[in-house]
Image (tube, rainbow, N blue to C red; front, side, top):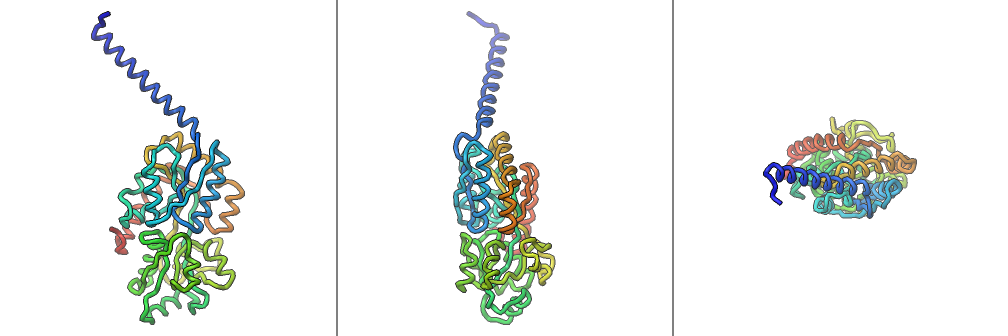
Length: 326
């Protein structure tokens, strides 16, 4: 049988349309059935980050047909975990418990890609770093610490999560503000070991999340001198802000959320976003926020993406000013 050119063109167009519809239907079906196996949530840090992620994963599992499993992949100020997730298929089965560290790790030169390598799912919470010292340090306030450091011929050993980490950035900004940046040496400890390093006298000061310090402050072993937000936080209502204590204008807060590799289907993102939202609205998550000392601060995927982009620009500028950007 011989077809006219017009008929052949029509057949090609029709076949192409059917194929496209078929492929679209397949993708839609895959997204509709997601997840068909466990979802792996990469956790970048220890301490409270790990504690919160484990609870979030467990609660999300209740709102999905498959479980969400929190897996620790620490190192490089978050770069190890980000690199793992960025290298996986964009199908929703590998997500990351992310934070401002996606910007600090990139601008520090720890990884070759930035936040644009990921698709936002939802912001979950915010946390405010705190500065703690040993109770027997002789420093009852931030002013005491600054005075002591300036009078000493020794460097102040400051514990941080890792070079290029968010606690590194926070510490650098704080000590530059106080005029003692040249008197500081940073000691990376990693994996949420701030209280251990302080109590063992291996560092003089640590900047980390309040939840790690509060039990030791209650026992009388550590003193929390200030928090880095402009407003006092509910879990430490009697602890002054660093701004109040002499670091004028300092205002640094970390957000935490979830993200997936760039290109993850929108329908998959929506399912994960919905499961995360249900999880953080639960009584267990609210109770944990009060006990651990973080603030629930949900943002949907689109608004979260705008925040990440805006925050990245601010972090880039701050790290440049502090000489931390590579």
